Image 1 (cartoon, helix red, strand yellow):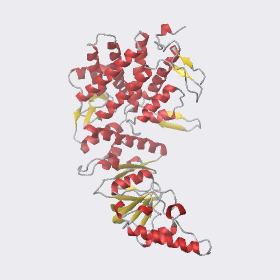
Image 2: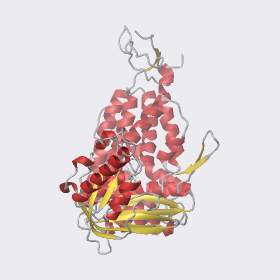
Image 3: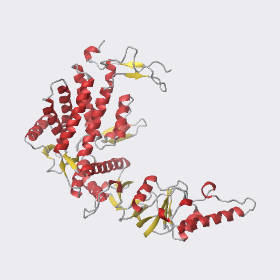
Image 4: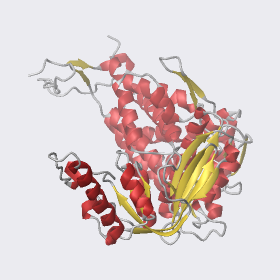
Length: 533
């Protein structure tokens, strides 16, 4: 039986909320086009400059269970609106503490928050608009997101690169985010970034592992996780240890059989995910039969090759058959800087594209790579239902005003909690205004007047520091991921609100006294007047 845990109650129990608010305050100033960057200095002295909230969270040295909970929720629910989630979470818990100080029980607040989140997301959905799944819609979504993510005035160039990966010039390709791969090269400027057709086979490695010259056309493709070399366990080599030349002759015969077996399948190209180097003699004999070999392919690339070619990855080469093969229209090489890469294309099955990001420094590359990955998530979220809401905090303000109207019809003390939730939502346009150098009070009043007049698309244009119709300015966001972020922030706040005690135990020793003999503690989060003793 473990040792009796130490129970933390009263004022100390509010420390998780202080952690939430502290994190919210840190990332709040990064929100919007004119949001600022944070410099996090590692223990080694290496600085990391970023305005990406998830990166900032990763780099912050915080030891607290509340931080672990927040980090877990963020990492388990990949989101493009992490800053919004953290900012909203901080406001929700701060407002909840104020209500607790007024004597309102945390359970009542949690129930009201849950109801308010459902009402808020429903009002957003009701006010959303349907958009065609075309290049123009994607352009607006991507431009809106990149406006807050890029370092210099380069969002337009980067947006076009991402669009080229998702849509062809005619805009008639079926959009599939899974067809897009991102590679980075630290050499030039981000404006030199390009989209290249096909799956990039090797990242940052020269194409020196095939003796068959590229390009290749209309080839049969074999994918395998097996090694392209003989060994006792995989290919049952018979060794003749009594004859000095027996081993060499026996091995050579086995290699010939192995090559003939692969050639009999009709394959023209072999891609192997094995970490072992391909046997030199086997590779040579395959090339004599015009069979190209690429080895040590990353697993994620193998998955994309399977999608593009239709091949089935073979675990053991002795089990391969012609039905496992796929097809590629082209395999060609392309020089990028000092390196040469191979690209596999098959337009009949998949329109795979590779976004080649370029920037002058590794840190800039990380920023752009994160931004492009988030753009793909934004597009993926939009493709779920084709619905968008106006950016610039317009949708949050609309939901906030709807909640205030809803709260007027609530007669018990939940009304205060619903109003507190509305205040938290309103903090989004307020923060955007502050970060854009605008007066937050005047801005929110102006937005309320616009929305009261039925102009619900008006929000904060952070780039130009004014209030505009976000729809008319092409600044929109996908409904689905935005609503998911609001629910996630609410769930995290409710989870913390429902904690009525913190039990401290030794590592590795489970708590056997989660509930005291007198029963569970009641009202562990008390108003300040009740916790000062």
